[in-house]
Image (cartoon, rainbow, N blue to C red):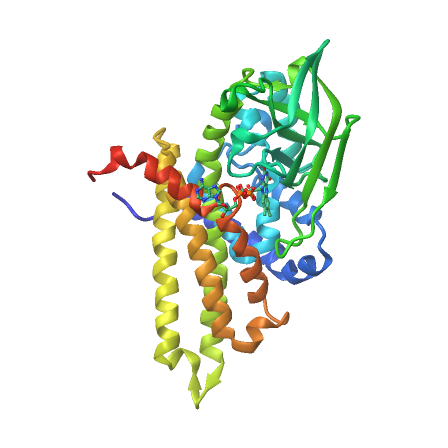
Length: 381
Ligand SMILES: Cc1cc2nc3c(=O)[nH]c(=O)nc-3n(C[C@H](O)[C@H](O)[C@H](O)COP(=O)(O)OP(=O)(O)OC[C@H]3O[C@@H](n4cnc5c(N)ncnc54)[C@H](O)[C@@H]3O)c2cc1C
């Protein structure tokens, strides 16, 4: 067992860190206030192969392993919680196409994202169905030459800025999760409308409600097999949850490092904060939780790379890293005192941005349910 990066990953980490420090960190506050998607940073990151980095070279990607993707994610949100995650989530729609799409779909749609032309999206959640995916009501009916889609999707990352979105819809209304299929929907089709949603954090992310009204897609826009969308989604989550874990890990690291630096500079009762034991204990706990989260995220990434992806590990990585990010950003803000609550420092943004980690990509409660369901096979270590 080796707990150190090999040469390749170390070089990647250094290169990504250099990029993130120069191109992401200085602009966090500005983009948070503007509330605009960071198009120029997305394009620069794509040019260097950091967007959808695991996508094979034949579709324009860098063909990196999943540990490499986790390293990119951690460095991006370490530099800035909002811009970092906005750029990283540009590839959200890609895995469904990459794993289940036709050759034509892969060739036509994956390069658009990895080359920085457009972000992508995946639309699962609806106003009345979030955790309970099988309760979605968006419907795809067969019509001549293709499908007609009707329904509303909500909280869709990149929903109003992407050229294409993967939409999960019911193709058999009576079959529960066995009646769901995935469709590739180009957003310039008639019947596609999106409205941006205002949020507490991740202000430079595009998060949208999507309305599909008699939207026609041709037969060949079905992704994978009819009625297999739910199973495809489970495969998607196995990887995406590790990625989100890495995104949240980076936020925890970014907040911790800023708090550590502040604790060294700021004085109270005649000595730096860091010399007060109560502050030392906070920092010790933050550091310990970050190291534990990193082990889980890297292990889950390694399992994917080794062909041993395991839903319990993916869920555990996402669960622990996101709850760590929430705790660490809370304590970091506390260490900053009143300045933590002001817009002068980055910490209030990290605190707001990290909060969603225990909600999206499956809530903490759902991750615990998944882990609990897998426990019978994991009672022995
Ligand atoms: C910023 C942001 C970006 C998002 N991006 C996307 C995206 O790109 N695509 C997409 O499809 N969705 C996206 N979502 C939606 C997100 O995945 C859902 O919000 C999430 O899955 C929870 O669904 P819900 O909000 O409907 O909550 P609900 O499912 O209604 O849950 C409400 C509460 O009940 C709990 N709960 C539900 N069921 C159970 C149970 N069986 N046992 C115990 N507790 C339970 C939940 O954990 C939660 O605490 C995004 C959300 C946000 C906020």
